[in-house]
Length: 313
Image (cartoon, rainbow, N blue to C red):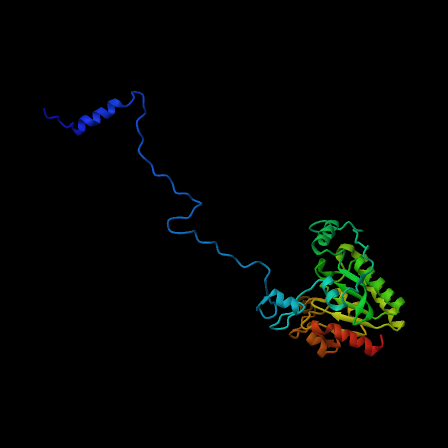
């Protein structure tokens, strides 16, 4: 007897009846998401672009060229394209000028105070603390003794990064003590001025008198036969330019340094006269006899040593 082949409907019914009564209906299949951290079907994900690290390049304020920082530092922070002299800190100037390992700081324990309780945007006492943390200096002057080409000298540097290098009581006291130390030790005296301010208004009359105090000490030093070499850098302004910075037996200056008492806008508004172009630059002042020589930074050490030998310092 011939057996019949069950139809598709019968087979489907048989499968359904064979399933348990309480089983849940089957869910439609859903494709699993591809792994996000593994390689995709199109290949590995592109690597992110690497940016240029910050601080590798400098823009010259003189010519606008982009300069490799390491190249500029090898030239003592001077632009290789146009010779523009960048700012350097007081500690760096000491390293550039003095023989290696010979600098001995003096009066490092002197710290400024707030005798007037002065306050502008914030209290002067708080400003002192923030400036000390930012610059690593106690105040705007660094003084001490060292050797220049094996010649013992007394050397001081003002730093415009600390409240624009203004002459507070500590700046005046450190410089005056430096001059007195040079007088007692019969040492040549070098002061590198990099101050964009004069008397520090936060200390009132106490700051203003520092100009006279340092100038009086220099007068005694001159009477004792000492040699004072003043080096003017960018900027040398205000009470610094009006006192000790202009009293050197020899006055050297870096190229294109800003040197003067008041700013050009203030002078023009006061005397109401059209001012010559670049009248406060070291080149203009050299032409008119205010300074003796313009010396590039790379030659400053040799020029000072030569001047000391020539003058018998």
